[in-house]
Length: 134
Image (cartoon, rainbow, N blue to C red; front, side):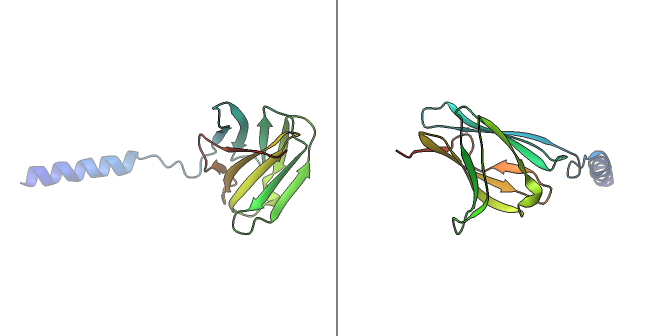
């Protein structure tokens, strides 16, 4: 019985002693939102070491908005030309938001979470919403 207790104690100390703490390590994230047909419509790149995140769309978009999930009110928005942009995360409080990219034919929508470590996590993986607007 004493050998069993000693073995469990040694194993416990070994697990605790060699456990890795990834909480403070910088991480890189890539989140993909797909349309109803399964094609990629939006890719979000985020590095926790940086104060910005990059959005890339398959289609050119002229505007994007980050909306409060509860009220639907815009928290951050900007005009855009082309298929990509960079968003300054320091201008946005931590929380869960709805991201919308407006193209000439439709709206690409995805839920995102901006945390205290300034990382973004897509809550709608791997499928996003593409809503027709014409």
